[in-house]
Image 1 (cartoon, rainbow, N blue to C red):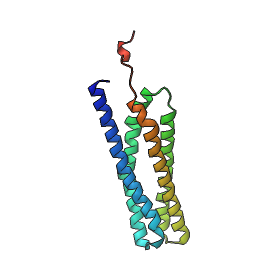
Image 2: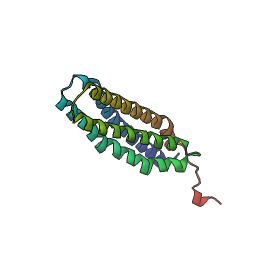
Image 3: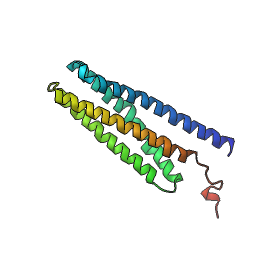
Image 4: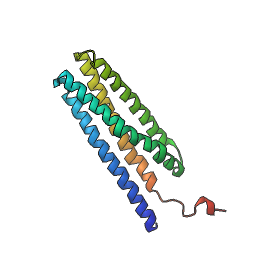
Length: 160
């Protein structure tokens, strides 16, 4: 392995690790919101749920878009099968659906803070947390090693 290739791999690992550390911090805050929800006032509930949705829009969605546009196609080019990236794309669709449930929850809470509404929001927050933690673990265990894999020394344009 050349020094440039090793340096490139380290940069990818570092970037990937940094991105996931930031996501985990957001997921931890999401968990705190879900945990605290029963004891919050209606305005505080709305504020904290809006904070989660803001994090989804400003941090999570751009991260998933980067993965869809760069990471997954790069892995598809290197991997012998597309199963790993298909599973991550499936994760992303589930995360998007769970996020939509939270948006609907927010609109339901605007009509009043009932016990059923709080329970639904908590379930949806914990559901999103579980999906995100599983997605990150799958990416670290299955995708990152594919990025680090030694490539054929002969680029396709040099093969006969």
